[in-house]
Image (cartoon, rainbow, N blue to C red):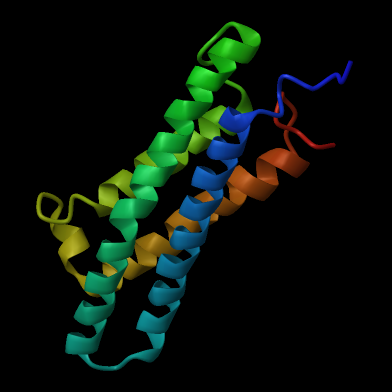
Length: 145
C-alpha cells in the first residue's frame, strides 16, 4: 500500500502556485518602480503607473486567494484556520500593504506616480520578508530551518 503525505495535496499545490504567481507579479511592479527612477518625463511615469495598476489587480487577488485557500487548507490539515504563525501574519501584512496601492482614487498621495512607485518598491520589501525573512529567520510552521 502506497503511503502519501496528507500535506502534499492539490490544495497545497494550488496555494503555492497562487502565491508564487502573486510574488512574481509584485516583482514586476517593483521593477516598474525602479524604471520610474530612470524615466524623466511625467507622461512616461504615469504610463508606468497605469501598467503597474493593471498588474497589481491580479497580483493582489492571487495573494488574497492564496491566503484564503491556505486558511481553508490549514483547517482541513491541522484543524484551525489561523494560527498567527509568522508566515501567515506576514502574508496578511503584505496583502494589506498592497491593498493601499489599489485605492489611489481615495488616497491622494498614490495619484503621484513618484510616490506610487516608491511605495511599490517598499511593498516589495514586504514580499521579500514574507518569503525569505520568515522562511530563513523566523520560526513557526512555515520555517525551513
